[in-house]
Amino acid sequence: MIAQRGWSRIGDAEWEAICAAVPGIAPEDLQILEIPVAPPWFGVRQHSLDELEESLCVLGEVYSRRDDLRRFCRASVIRAKDHARWASRSAHVDEAKRLLKAEMVEWMLVWLGDPALFPPWVSVRRAALTGPRFPPPEAR
Image 1 (cartoon, rainbow, N blue to C red):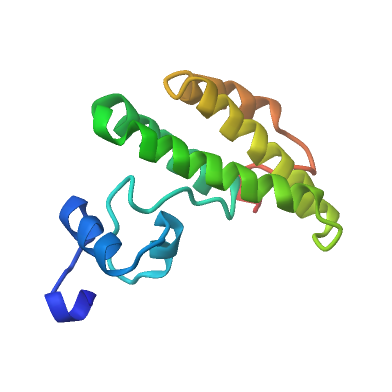
Image 2: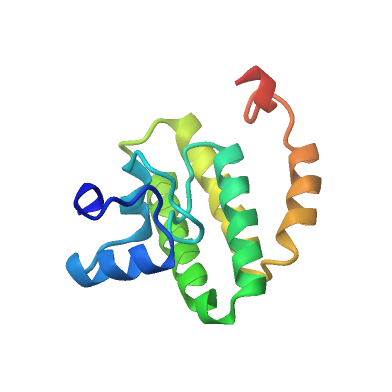
């Protein structure tokens, strides 16, 4: 569909066309595409704390600027939170990843409480996250 229509980027119009053609598609399904996907259509990336922070900050910007997309942004974060919560409790996931996912759940709960509060909160939280559990980005 992307190649057929000559898209080089996924934005509002492309997202609407994809939703019409692929019922039940989630924003996270677009993360594997090899073309840029505009926010909020890329969903919440949560492979690392850096990705999560970037995703939540960008979604917070969309949330503050576009009243028509607030519900969409919240639904994306709730879906990602639920996924992270499942991973944080799964016996099939190693302990380090369970701890990471539990931390991510907390970040998303803060965002859901008040997206505008998230950027200053995450700065403080990042400063508190030192040590072997969550090494600084340059040590990863």
